[in-house]
Length: 265
Ligand code: SAH
Image: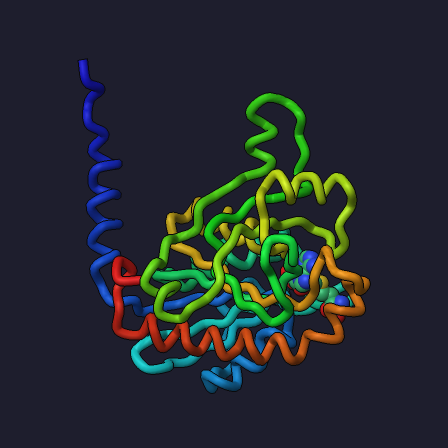
């Protein structure tokens, strides 16, 4: 006998399908570093929100404004209150994504930032990738099923038209809380079949997925993990130039998205 229809699920699916047919109106960008966020804040002429939508005392910053027909929000998790550096990594990324979804009810999340690339998988410095899938590489739990939970592999929201129109590269993104790569991380990244590596993507995806908000991941390569130079040196050397490239890609993506609904992406 067929199981009884779950009415709530049927209604949710119908609502989601309806959402996909409405023009996209509100976009939340989650951007980990100030140096990545500010060029875009200037490009879109966004202003910092004086009455923060976030709880008092939190370092998270929202820049917002209207560009074409879109409400653009750039959320930067700010500087760590203790150490004074950019709050990079998965913990802040999940928290700000969740809080932004609650406060701003976006139609789409865009996690934009820099990443490390694997030249063995075809990545070059300055390439901009749209991730096809995200997963973690530093959550090892060698117990059946917990192992898969730890990896947390997820498909990203599919945007075939965007990918084709803007000629972006695509590949899998692997996320962990370290800038460097231990041999164990490397084995997991290979198992994840990743072309690019960052410190936020899968954590943003986790919060977006729980909230059923579609998310895309735009990542520009600052350093080659399997190249000859030390990661930190290469990252800092390329950060400014690669951020400018990222900036241009994000602009093109927003121009493409404007006036479209989710199902047209
Ligand atoms: N030294 C930097 C620290 C940035 S940490 C500073 O001055 O602030 C690296 C940031 O860039 C993270 O947000 C991460 O997502 C991204 N990133 C760039 N290259 C990376 C790599 N090889 N591995 C992991 N994350 C990388």
